Length: 184
Image (cartoon, rainbow, N blue to C red; front, side):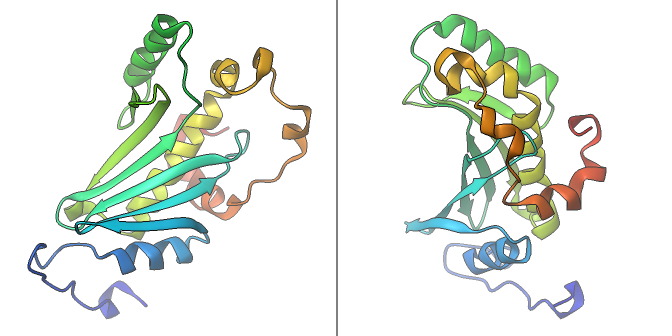
């Protein structure tokens, strides 16, 4: 369906006419060949759990959270909790906040490092969502060696990583030309 054929977004009691509906997010994910692992909804907020692969970093758990009136948060669970050497890890996250514009690094309540991006509702469409997901995956690819110590025993990347093929290769190829220095 082309943009001209797209029906107008319905107004609801809680969301204005230009709100994005959860069915649109699911359609866009399907068009981008991204598999939804789990879906939840509570108090008008929808979320989807995904697993995405980069070219170098695989099995990235990603959660999308949609407030239909405000926007979409793309939340990448970058690594398991990092309770030891917290200061060093925290400094890395702060440095990366400066190095990667339009992406946020933080520590979740469970001390897990996370990478996120927000898309305001007035700019949210399939292309913006797809580009944002590709950008987050490309950042995780770029930081593979620096996050290895959080991910694996002794910080050693598993030998089979070199032979793996990304499950969402089409997403990466589709947006590669728009990711600039993050790919190459």
